[in-house]
Amino acid sequence: MSEHTNPTTLSLPVPDVAEPGRWVRSLLVAVRWAQEYTVRHRTRREQAGPSIWEPIHLGTGEDGRPVRVPLIYRNMLLAGEPGAGKSVGLNNIVAHAALAIDCRLWLFDGKIVELGLWRSCADRFVANDLSDAISALLDLQSEMDSRYVVLDDERRRKISRADGVLPVVVVLDELAYFSATVGTKREQEAFSVLVRDLVARGRAAGIIVVAATQRPSADIIPTSLRDLFGYRWAFRCTTDTSSDIVLGHGWASRGYTAASVAPETKGIGFLLAEGGIPRRVKAAYLSDEQVYALADRAALRRTAAQADGLDTGTAS
Image (tube, rainbow, N blue to C red; front, side):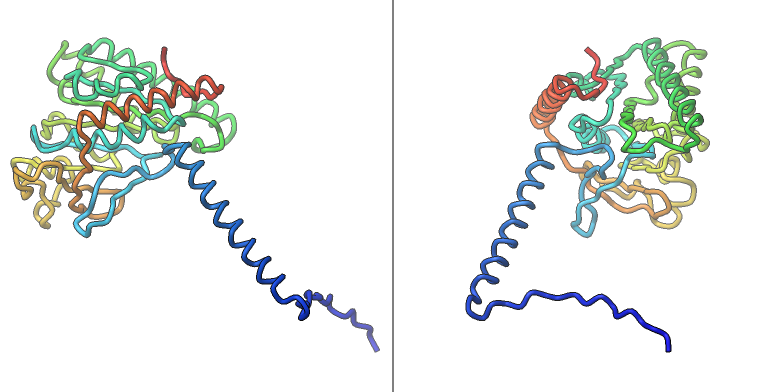
């Protein structure tokens, strides 16, 4: 007859009937500790601020719910006619990236004054100088290539949050200014080729490109470039064709067209995310005063992070 080992018996403590309140007090203490821990954890998160690895708040959907999208490993295209609210949507993205000390922020602004409000917290700011823009893009391309060399040596496909490698958020506004307005034809083509390369190859290396234009035309946003953007946000457009240039061919015929956005409803556009269908989103509005306040706060956060020994990559 085989011997069987008795299963381990767990002996649970038996409440002391002579002191029933002791268990109630212990439970109350545990609940209070959990509440205090939650408050401390929330406070630390608020003090830490946003992270580029977390979803970015863009605005509100038609159902009244907030719209947030992860930007890491992705790129975004924003386009619409002048005054449609494109800059409103762009400010939400820049604000998140500026406040996040775990990324670098490179700003390209042909008009100077649109992204110039964020100049104090940018790691590099390029104004209306095409030569400077090309030089900056070459630096980004070199950084991207260096990161891929490291990833290849380590037999990995992309950077991760645990690496400590800072993603770089690259914001381009106005795309048409650099690619079709100033400089020589050769310089414009060089700019466009570099942008295309960063959009095509940069995601896994942590290079995030956010491009904006008020000229949604085929010469500014060719299909081969548009299709590389995982997110496309079409604000008010004058025609269905212009809307399709941003969102993709055929969406207007299916009822998703930014030409249907009323001119007086600024900041509303159709957002197309990866693998989804366009949905109406109203961008969260930030006034100039709020932008300046956020920019000052972001600059202080980045300066403090540098003082604490954290590499934010902020340029002096």
